[in-house]
Image 1: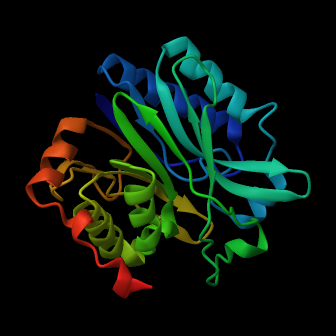
Image 2: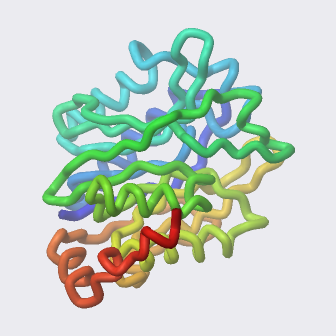
Amino acid sequence: MKIAVAQISCSLGDPEANLLKVRDFSRGAKEAGAELIVFPEMIDTGYSMQVVQTHAASWTSGFVPGLQKTARELSIAIVCGVSERVGSSIYNSQVFIDSHGNIPAKYRKTHLYAVAPVEEQTCFAAGDTFATFALGGLHFGFSICYDLRFPEMYRKLATEQKVGAFIVSSAWPFPRLEHFRTLAIARAIENQSYVVASNRVGKDDDLWFCGSSAIIDPRGVVIAAASADREELIQADLSEELVLSVRSRVDSLAHRREDLYK
């Protein structure tokens, strides 16, 4: 299956403008033959805790229904990082919308970036479960930005939930650009899985985002990559056959010594 990754900037506190950009990039992905397009983290509100607290919305109106309409009209599946307001809580979430406009799966960020000056814990409640979805013969696992630093999460998804492709929606900043690249490749190699990483460009408050979105295959080969500072749409073909082939040659997942890890 062909997938696309949108590397975009956002209009801080302007969900309507950001939704228009999502529609434009989704249309471009559909015209290129993609079945799925992946967007970065928190693209409805932008990545600013103060702005998120003001503009975060439930999924009954506004941005997410707009995503559903876009997916349905273009007949393309979408994974997008968005805010999710539920009662008095706000979650940093990913939503999967299928090509019919339905929401079969979602994920709430489990590892919050509790580091100054961002301090996500002052805005978000943490999720407490991992999540997956199936599409085009592949089993995809959700993850968001800071999750990339926690290999235990990806190993659990790969071994217990049979994930062969990880999606990362991110707002990763420039000071740690090499961390983003290195960690994404490591997660692909160690789990013999695709990594589909969509990162922001542009600036929210005092954070400049480092782009460098990428699609990495189960051998750790970067098969599509974006720049560090421009909006772009990248694409690649993913196949379950390659995941199975790589894992059959060196079945490292089966060689783990779990008796020593506990």
